[in-house]
Length: 108
Image 1 (cartoon, rainbow, N blue to C red):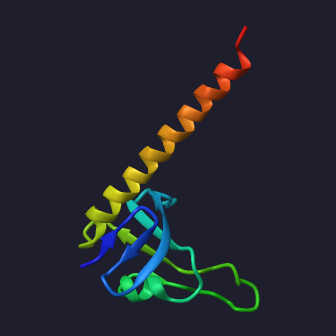
Image 2: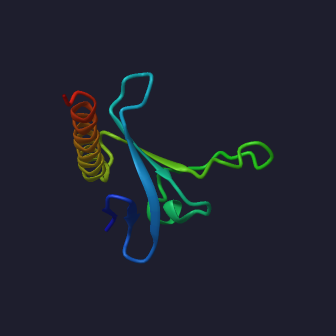
C-alpha cells in the first residue's frame, strides 16, 4: 500500500522524498505529477509502474525522475488529495505572509 505524505511517498519499506504538482499539462488532462527530490530510484521502487527518468547523464544531471498519475489510475485519488492539501496549505501560508507584509508597510 502506497502512502502519500506531505514530503514523501512510502510503501512501508522504501521512502522517497517528493514534491507534487497539479494539472501541469498543456493538453489539459487532469494529472498529478510527483517529482523525486533525491537522486537514485527510490520513487521508482515505491511507484514502479508510472516512474519515468529519461536522463541524459551528460546534460540532464539535475533530472531525478517523476511519476505522472492520470484519472483512472488506482493511486490517482490519494495522490490528488495529498497534492490539493499541500497546495491549500501553501496558499494559506503565502496569504498570511502577504497580509503580515501589507500590515507592516501600511502602519501609521
